[in-house]
Image (cartoon, rainbow, N blue to C red; front, side):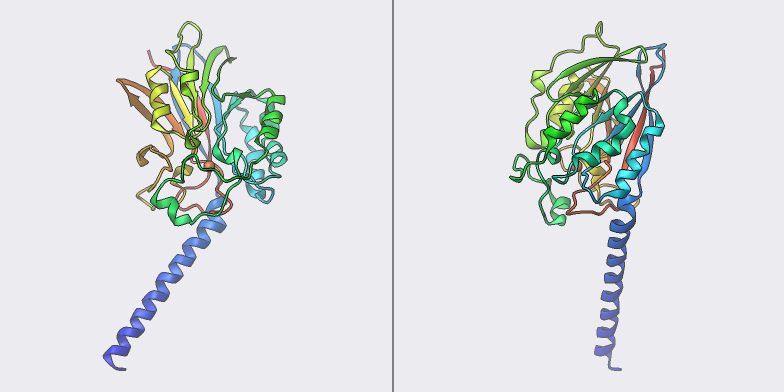
Length: 309
Ligand SMILES: [Fe+2]
């Protein structure tokens, strides 16, 4: 074999190897990890001294379609955790017929007190986008596709179950003897957030713990919540980066949050105040990008406990 043909053969073998690795990763991401659901457990010391624990189930980004049977089954088993409260940070829908699949999956969780906000994927059906663009820049803000999803029908079902819509709203409820004050916004990714409607210093004589709830953790929203004195902010939207680099982490957050806080429990500091921040990596993906890599889908059981003296 001549030196030239030997180099050509080695190059072809290399290309074949790289292609095989790529196909293998894609198969793993789309056939296994996208349905490798995890329950994250965190403890958050935000309750007044002496208060008993409050168990909060945080779910987000279901992106449900009728075909997502594994996701439906896994979510339907979460009721066995018997949380005291459910927080749903939006992007429940990805199909015009998805509403009954979401409510059936929530099942007995709808008997538990719940609060929710909407995400862009509740309002508008997903559209095909080049998945590589997700890694290079955030999906465009405020430019939804034209096709609406039946979010109002889902909202009716959630309200009938007693869950509270926190969109630009303040709500206080007592759970295990703890007065929990919530303030929520509409979706900041669509620039629908109007935090000013619910802003103002937390009234400590009215609530024992203050939780801010929003779909997309844009800094303008979480900073304003932090400055007002919230104890905890809960959000989704990032999908944890969705396609991550093993042993490195996320490349993107799909908003202006830094990648170090793309998922899990962290904190947010603004104007000298610090608030606990929990961002869910979410349970689903857009049907047009049904892959996860080094970032399995998840729900979180947050146990709120008393601050140390
Ligand atoms: Fe989402």
